[in-house]
Image (cartoon, rainbow, N blue to C red; front, side, top):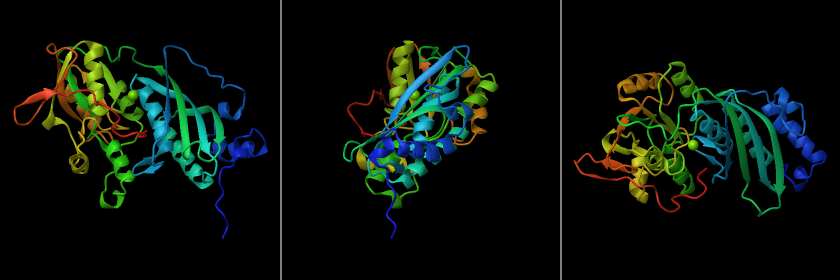
Length: 335
Ligand code: MG
């Protein structure tokens, strides 16, 4: 039986083996003229206000229902640009690979990165590969940074206005629940998959429709609880949300009951919140619902001038409580 080809320390050594890995794998998948020029640094032609972001990805397991570390590494950075109304243009990409990692798995990861890039048109224009001895990393870690031109500079976490409607783009908690499920080997018992996805296409539609968005943020680590609390503080407002209006699928509800989590605290990787003037909120939802994965977009609450800096959750039974920032480490290595 042929032995599985694996990444060797020599693949990160700067010599012949590394050159071959880069040419055969990365250049083929990410092919574009800037990357192919192989200069010491990518030469970019950009003007206007530029958004710049970076993120490192260490998710465990590397493959999960609805995605893998590669899809996550592209969607994560592209989404942070999209949330600033910046068109994702150029990305960097660094791999830290553990000696012995299967080349076949690396190929799968690189392929899903290339596929995800197509959704926004962003390009990887520079990168780096390091290989560390067995035991010094867990499979593969990926860092991506990205830049994009800001198309609407007014969008900001500190721009929520009293009376705004708060919209969620889809059902919440899927990514956190999918990772939890993969770790506990519950995969076969559920059809649950991560929401991991590139949000630029829907943001592009909203910008094209000239929607007056005050703020957008993807609800990644810390879930919607984190975003709502960050917004309340940054904009010096109160936010009230209604539990019955927040979409949560049955699988996520079930896992939350089983593990004692709240869906509001669970991570998402393709779900975002918007704050928009109340009178245009229904129209915004109409634009969103025409778009994939946003069929469940809903108004979940509003911005108020009482309890400044706090988020209040109204329950279906008429009671209310503070929705706080999640505490401690819910699930390490989620993204
Ligand atoms: Mg973000």
